[in-house]
Length: 97
Image 1 (cartoon, rainbow, N blue to C red):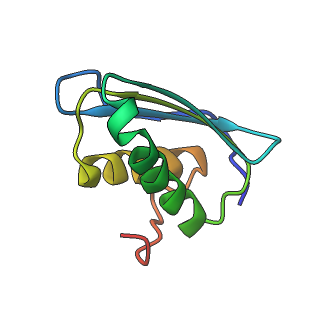
Image 2 (tube, rainbow, N blue to C red):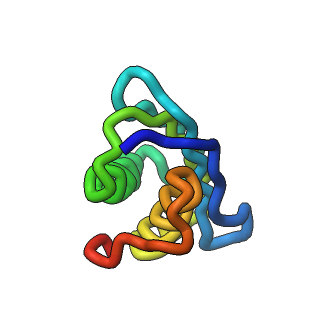
Image 3 (cartoon, rainbow, N blue to C red):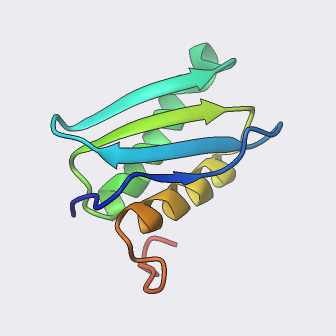
């Protein structure tokens, strides 16, 4: 699927993550800002990538600002951002959830 508009989900509060998706042209490109990127950066990117793959998104620019979010929070915020970016908020993909 192709991203229709730039979308944002999450906050910059402690234990949360902010995920912004924009239309991309060269696969999935990450911009990760996290104090724990050295330890968990690969896992954060893997969680986001798995959600994008589940929705069939092949090209996206992903900006992640992590404030210590758990994996389930990262997944939930990414799902919300994807649904907003694809403009399918009213018709969620239940298989992904």
